Image 1 (cartoon, rainbow, N blue to C red):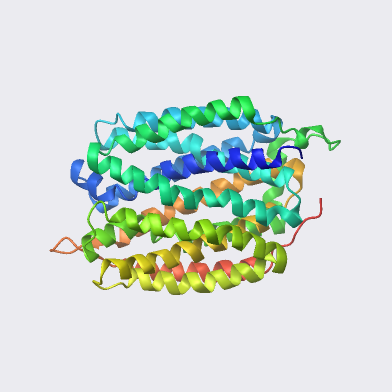
Image 2: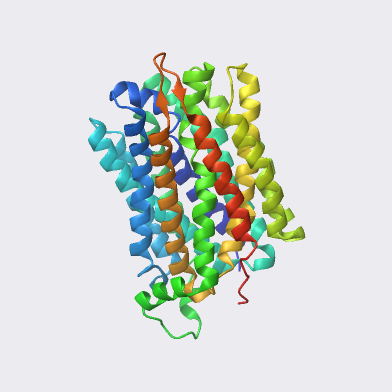
Length: 396
């Protein structure tokens, strides 16, 4: 495809803004709990509301996403995401913030679906891991640049400012999509007969390979996200990080993955996606155990531990996502990826709520039972590798 690099850049920017919006809530956990006088369980509701709304959007989108030009679908969804993010800055209480985060998730969660569908349509499988590594580097840049800046803005101007900043950036990105992103109609211009969307969705669950890919997605997310909502609060309440020092976690973790994710993509294309997934998952298991059992240590030791987790946990998502895009043909990829996003978001929301149920506070205000959450994440990580072994690539 012509202008492939331009397309990848635009998609990476879309991912960057969406990921910053999703991630920025977690390091604001301590502030939000204090300002709105909410419990750890209520805080996880704020985090999970985004995911549960995205779950619903994915199911709805599966009926429509393959009927439209990918550019038009992306533009519509991104505008809704932008408005929802800006609204979060004006939430007067916990309930309204919960509502506005749900609106952001309703549109923002669908962005990943469209981005992955575009990558699957445009990039051949033998180069797809490399492209996926580039797109997923947006997570790293969000961690290095977006989240630390957001934390600094929140510390200096209030918790509302990060949402206004992301919203402002998203307005600019909307213009970039409108004027510079090419039309993508590969899935519309082929000669494959149109399939009823409902039958298409039913066929996903009848197809063993695609059902297995959905189950793999759910277990991988449970093995990844269960510990994430409380990483920053744990480092603050238990290890002694200040509000500003929390940004070190995201800066150094993200900086490392800027280098690591494209490398994981190239390694996946060269040696196969499953072997790289296996190696990264083994590293993730050790990192999960280290984070969730961390005793009071120096800040830089804690940052080293969290950085190791960023690298291996994010790295395994590159081959994992590439494998999932290859279980379905182009004409049905949008619908499948929409259902897949719903499954992923359901797992994200559930893992956050699960962590909120397990994690509590002791009499001194420190978080307790975080290690139990870690053991659950380790078990899910092992199960995800077992499931991945049986995924099969569909020839296009």
